[in-house]
Amino acid sequence: MALGLNSGKGGGGRVFYAHYAWVIVAVIAIMQMVGTSVRMAFGVFIDPLEQSFGWSQGTITLAYAITSVVTALASPFAGWFGDRFGARKAMSLGTVLFLFGMVLTGFISQPWHLYLYFGLLLGIAQAIFLVPLIPAAMHWFRRHLGVGMGLIMAAWGLGPALAAPIIGAMIQYMDWQRAFMALGVGSALIMAVLIVLFRDRPSDKGILPYGFQDGDPLPETIKIDPQRAKEFNGYMRRTAAYWNLSSIYFLGCVGHAVILVYIVPLAVSEGLSLVTAAALLTVMSAVSIVSRIAVPVLCENIGTRSVMAVFYFLQGITVVMLFWTHDPMMFYLFAVLFGIGYGGETGGFPILNRKYYGQAPTGSPYGVQMLGAGLGMALGGWIGGPIYDMTGSYNIALMISVVASIAGMFSIIVLEPTHKLLIPDWEIEQAFGGEPPAQQSAASTSGGDD
Image 1 (cartoon, one colour):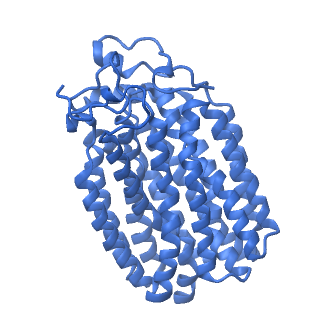
Image 2 (cartoon, one colour):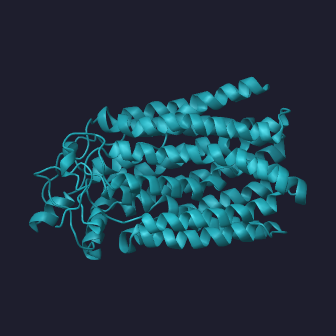
Image 3 (cartoon, rainbow, N blue to C red):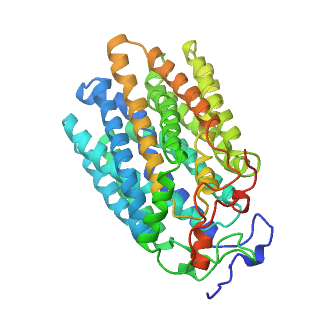
């Protein structure tokens, strides 16, 4: 293999040094930040749509639920597409769908228009932005994956932090229809530039993965054989973690989707203005950046299951505050405390995939995990609407949020230990062409275990 300037071998044991992997991290972070922020800030649109059309909150938030369900159902396909054709082609497809979905949403006049354009088109685009890109990032890191994942996860917090006040201001001074169209065109232009910079694997640049050291098996330099990828997907599907991680993702997303969608209308009902209430999402998302960066690193070096369990607990227990929160200062205090747990809720999943499955293509299991995440976002994001329509209160929805997060914490505790791979080692079979060997230690791919 021809090695480029930043082969990764010169880095030794250093955590940071020059390598194209950091360009990939930046591209993925910005891509996901731009592509998913509109959905994460959906609560900002509830009042404007309610005032424009007189639709109930249940009718409006059904669009959010449809988007999440479509994202969930499309996630396994998106994972397969990324493994089969590469994340770069997936990004191109997602950008086209995103552009059409955003622009067309600006012309809606009936609920089914909202469900089709925002729900279906953006739902598929969301799956493509969320699923293939994380496994693609994993290809670029032999070591220090937690640092790379932490920076990418930080974008999931930074995106809504920036998007919520920007969208709120655009709606206030431009109207929501023009806001959708402007966001769609502007975001698509940014995505096009990112696609030009992106590469699926280090071998596409003639370099080795970040953190590669002498003695490591050489990564493959040719396209993955679909038959071998299918074989290893079969190994992964036979592990309990393959399915349990999906259910844990589901519970965590139910827990925070209730808050992400309904914190704005809840705060407005308590007398806060739309712009002030939208700023709660900004605070929540901004605070979450710290834990999004920290959790993957902590998982890699301390213990994945224990760290994830702590942050699931924090996400759930802080919601109890909302039962007696009525003034702006208490809302902002909640946003800070909830943001810590919310930010750390997702960061351990890529690390668990690496610990359980090593260097095997992980688009398929991550797609199934995002299936659970999407269904959780759908349930949590929709259920508060009809509950409010029937009871005039969000209290039952808040209780559901608490229970889901705490249940996710207990599910994490009973996951398999992470000290060894759950499937045969992909790289050893690739390097030596033999039969799949016995289960290998996961220590070579990540640090601490639990």
